[in-house]
Image (cartoon, rainbow, N blue to C red; front, side, top):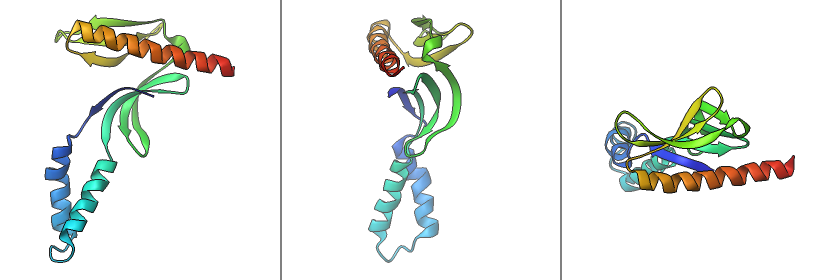
Length: 140
């Protein structure tokens, strides 16, 4: 279950800087050019690289995520049982960060510009985490 997702490469840049050189180097421009362009574009969209925070199993994982393969780099992970509280804290740039606090560490789940949308997002995230905790407890 996704708590936050931020694209690392915008789709326009996929088209301009990644697919254009691939098309120029690997394909013949005379035969079925448009079919090959569409094929490359769909492959690049399929490999969507993002910075994600997800609920997986009984933990929250933050890292770099590629949609069909999963996490390729995990930055932080916190078990749901270790979370003491979810808070909103302002960072140095005056953005509101939703943080999961454990006994010795914290994980930034989401960063939002204003306080009121951050409080609404905090309620949604708390609901998702609490429902996941209930599901885990019923299976144990």
